[in-house]
Length: 144
Image (cartoon, rainbow, N blue to C red; front, side):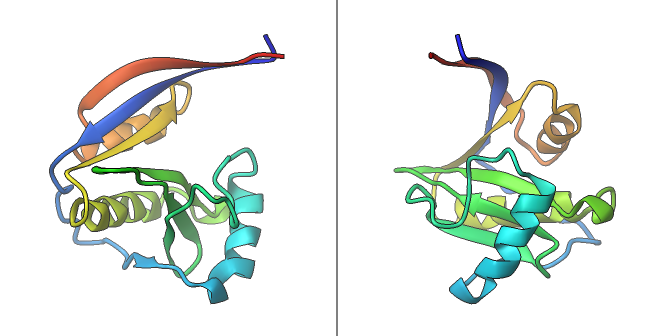
C-alpha cells in the first residue's frame, strides 16, 4: 500500500448561518490564476485541487488570501481545496470562505458536501459549526 488516508465526508442541505464579520466571497476569473497558484502553493501544497484541473468547475475566494474550488457533480455542490494564507489564519477567513461557497453552491445544488482528513480537527469543527452535521467516515487507499 503506497498511501492510506482516513477522512470524513460532511454534508448539509441548508445554508450556513450569516456571520457579521464575513468577508465577501466571489467566483474567481482567469485573471486571478497567478495569485491563485501562489496562494495554493504556499498555503495548501498537498491539495489535489489545482488551477487547470479538469475536475474543477469554479474557484472561489476573496482578496486572494483565501480560496476554494468547486468540484460539484450532479445535484451535489462540492467545495474542495479550501485554504487561507498561513499568515492570515485564525481571523475568520476560512469560515467566511466556507460559508460563502456553501451559499453559492446551495443556490445551484440540493446538497453541499465536502471531505476532510480526520487529523484536520479545526476544519471538521468549522464545517460542523457551519451546518455540515451529517458525517460519513471513509478511507482512501492508493495501491502501488
